[in-house]
Length: 395
Ligand code: NZQ
Ligand code: ZN
Image (cartoon, rainbow, N blue to C red; front, side, top):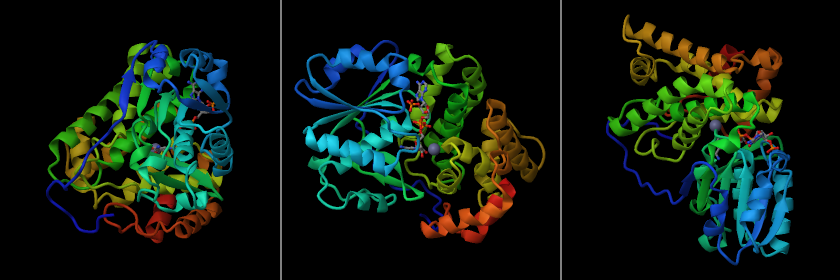
């Protein structure tokens, strides 16, 4: 967390080892991507991959390899479920994990990869926040993913989010990058509309949490971020309404991956406050991840618009073409446009629309405090009182 304003691009290292396999009808190529003698554990969620035939195709492509299955990884994957998969992986000497599903399955599989050969208390892996977990590189089981929901970017990053004892905990390790990510837009045609809308908004907010801070003259990162956002604005409503429109879905898929594969976040200040507050809302009220973001982000900006002024003026001009009027009114218009975009794709933008009462907002603040989320944002100035203000405004 940065407390001091830098005005130049920050130093950075960037390495992303994931081999992206993008496009139609490529499942047969698993035969070249998964090691020939691997003992594979295929992981999946509540059954969509069975219902839509993907699992059968995956098993066929794996040929004579020794294959085990672990289904039932739920949305916002639970530690208790993942630990059952860890037991299977230990018992069967699994040496390759293949996740087939959305962010929850991909994240859950990363946790399985990290926990299986871990000697200590596996629950302790949840308490390292944004610091990599203390696991030796050769103790992480390699994993590949077949993404069926474009949203989280998990397919090309080293992060996972795991639910445990009423909280959601980020976990990461450089060896948790998938070795390959198969991205076939057609595998997403079966998604319910609301999950597509969730994906559009999650990707959009990922871009913004790496963009709407303060300027450091990072022109490439800014323009890539603006390009992804303009793409999402163009194709978001189309891809929600037209599930089999390949072009729109392909652009959603690559936008979502590009939003959180680390590239646009290099050398710039980051602000994951919307996500941190959102995670508490999911844990407490079971609101879908992206829907928490749609509620929190506009309110957070309304509270922090001075801190973020310069970038919000740039966002208004370059993403929404708002260049008339004084700067403060341009920022207000850009915030309103953002909120309207979330509504347009189909997500509620107020907490009360999710059945949360005003009395319950205190629970969110308590949870933030319990999880140490007391100095959020790029400034570190979002304390519990400011979070409360954001929640009040989001209600
Ligand atoms: O479980 P199944 O039956 O597969 O159904 C899923 C699930 O009900 C369904 N689905 C997925 N692909 C489908 C499909 N239904 C029909 N056709 C398909 N092709 O969609 C539902 C939601 O799936 P889920 O994986 O939970 O959604 P999403 O991809 O939005 O992932 C959300 C999780 O990712 C975490 C979130 O916190 C949350 O736990 N995040 C992970 C991040 C990361 N690793 O970098 C960053 C994100 O900010 C996020 O925090
Ligand atoms: Zn997210």
